[in-house]
Image (cartoon, rainbow, N blue to C red; front, side, top):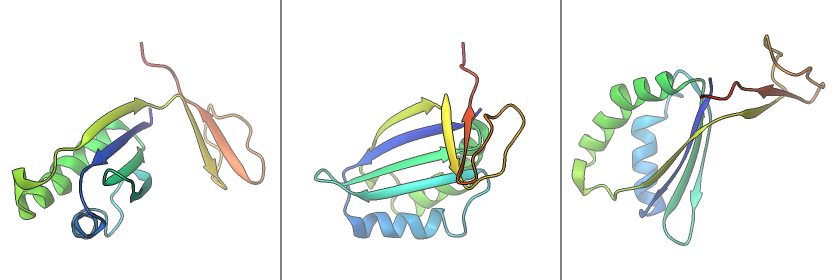
Length: 115
């Protein structure tokens, strides 16, 4: 099942770029999309992962060490909200088993709801 989250961090764009350089270059395995941008309060990050396990693996292998390298607890504490994805659209993506029939421009996937 896909896993997504929204994270709001009270940080500057320059701080985010330092974090990004240590964590998402090269693109981590299992990451489908990451969207980030400045807000009035700091930075908003939206990620969609192939699974929660892929996210947890990335967090343990790359994110936690990067946070430690940037000073650990000094990093602003984010507001983190996870999301169990029930509907995902992959523009131009190939069809997968159980997915709705794609059009030439996108693929939609109805994900099973967790109980």
